[in-house]
Image: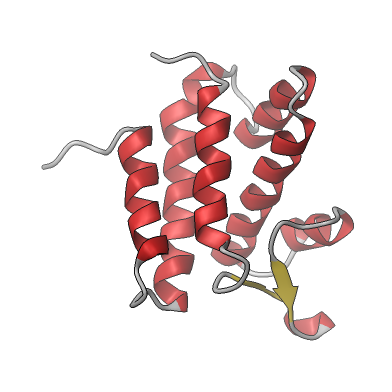
Length: 137
């Protein structure tokens, strides 16, 4: 059994996929969900029980990092949409604007375009900045 990667390695793995010209949509979607989920698991200890990304957003905003807080929350919602499909996260995401990525498709088939706007690289940068605002172990 191998050790699970720490946050820096987790984000480096995602960046490697972002930098790969061979990465396809399915691979980018999978690494997005994996990265956001593992990021939460690695850093959950910074907050009492409850919704990690809501608490992270509130902490960042409360410390004067409003744009970063909003971006973190957008990417969290995007990962939920990729993982679960439409629903509450997509509806909430649609209400928040502007999004740092592209949402496309018809109203009944909206999706996150993970191949546009440097989606994965921007996710990695956003999570890197957020992690730097939390105390290290």
